Structures are given as C-alpha cells and as structure tokens.
Image 1 (spheres, one colour):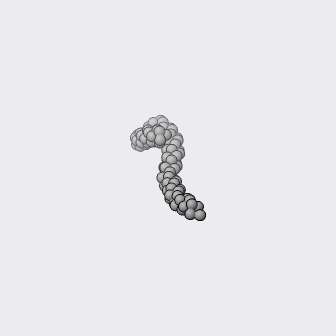
Image 2 (cartoon, helix red, strand yellow; image 1 turned 180 degrees about the horizontal axis):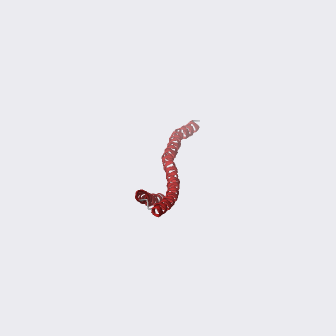
Image 3 (cartoon, one colour; image 1 turned 90 degrees about the horizontal axis):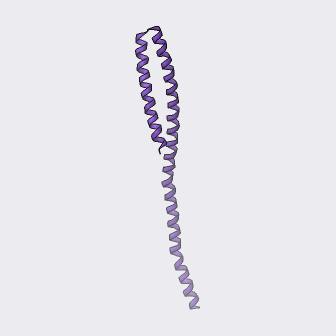
Length: 110
C-alpha cells in the first residue's frame, strides 16, 4: 500500500510542473497573438495606403490631362494670366505625380 501511495505522490507532484508549463505555453500563444495583431494592423494600413496612393495617382494624371487641355486653349486664345496660372498648376500636379509614384514604389517594396 505504501508503494502505491508513493507512486501516487510522485504522479501528483509531477502534474504541477506540467500544468505550469501548459499555462506558460498558453500565455506565450496569447502574447504571440497580441504581437501579431499589431503586424496585421500594419499590413492592413500598408494595403490601404497603396490603394489611396493608386487612386490619387490616377486622379492626378486625369487632372494633368485636363490642365494640359486648358493650357492649349489658353494659348490659342492668348490669355497670358490663364497661361501662367495653368502652367503653375501643371507644374504642381507633375510634382504631385512624381511624389505619389515614389510613395507607391516605397509601399510596394514593403
């Protein structure tokens, strides 16, 4: 009988470390989930940024085409103030396009 009690004591005392180790694994898994949640949120933000930059690039290219038509018309009519204003706008839109393309390139490298 004493032999059985000794074996039971060894078995029950051996269970505590197993419970602690399993709890530690669960804690680690929980920490991993939390750590990955931030990364997943970051990936979502990158995808959203890529979508926004792409949309903005398309809109700026359309805008550039419209300004170029307006410049042609202003030149045909010889309206100097309009030519100057539209030329400045074209320069700004071209700068915007270059910057957006750089940002898109950076986002796509992530």
